[in-house]
Length: 271
Image (cartoon, rainbow, N blue to C red; front, side, top):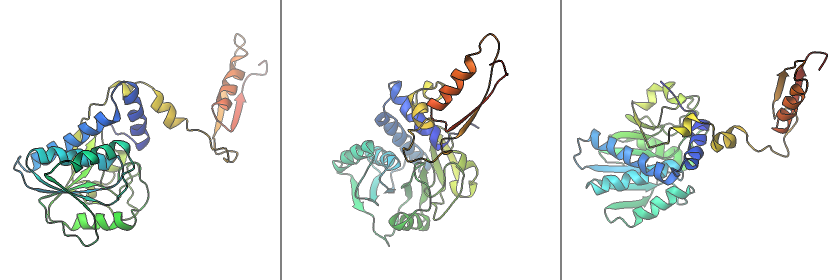
């Protein structure tokens, strides 16, 4: 089964824009996919749904899911753990929700009781590492205490998407709706993901198959001017022939210009 690391997802998002499919479209498709899974879980019978949302792209996915569920007469309550939504696409979808009369928006407060048929985890996505803190940790514990069906978007909040490590509180989902492909950490932590459902969000095939601007942005990050020698990595160039004596030097120079701190050249004496 193919997996996508957090870096690969970030690269694919940028590449998708390059190929003409913007992140707003991807978010719409992701949220709609989550809503479809919830409808399948409830046999399309409208019921009470709680969404616990953070401030990033995962929150945006949950806002879209809320809108789609509400349009099918589900009773949707959205609990905002953060009053400041940082992701621009998520912010736009939150503004749309504010104009929906059949969606209840409220701040998350410790001690709230989630007496709902379905609880959606829209808290922490693949860009967050380390143990959840403060309200986020409390919200995760509240989700876990709910008797409703717990649905995690992409990954259960608190799980490292790449390593599968759980450094603190983690959502113990009944269903994980992962986007595009499973993240490596999901396959290493079956005890927290529940049933795994993969949702296609309309990512252009070339966003994953062809090296694009996203790959350059992710894999060739801008070097920190305060970086120490060695942090940029070391490169060994093994090259050289009598026909192309300049090739080894050009290759070594290219590695250095690309950001390598130390470049070693192994070449025949005549080079």
